[in-house]
Image 1: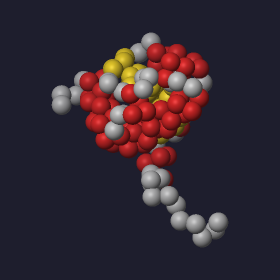
Image 2: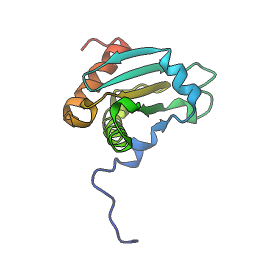
Image 3: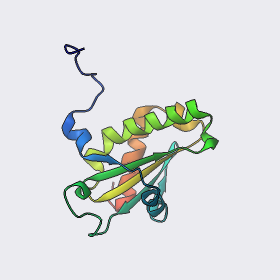
Image 4: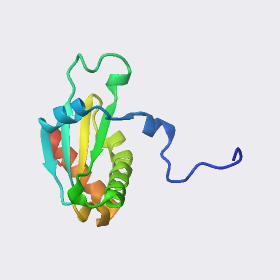
Length: 136
């Protein structure tokens, strides 16, 4: 496998290195109390981290979390929805996200797995603009 070329859909290392995945429940709970913006296929929760949380180089980047409840479907459907959310986050957040912010993408039943990825990317861009107060 040493001669295997990287997958064409894999983002360049610079893009993927600016996103850190949330893993602690406390981070998800803090994001749940913050701003939120709904889209047809998912909901975005966004929270600016405090200065204490941004200490060091690891805290300066964009952190992202993904969640899908059992309302989305069985494990296969939830994982498919989360894969699609990860894909749009990789494409949009390095450009339109803000360092020092946490974002949580929450999948919706049926729509997250079936909506076109280009439409979902446009939805995420619009949601981020509204959350950050940008006029678009």
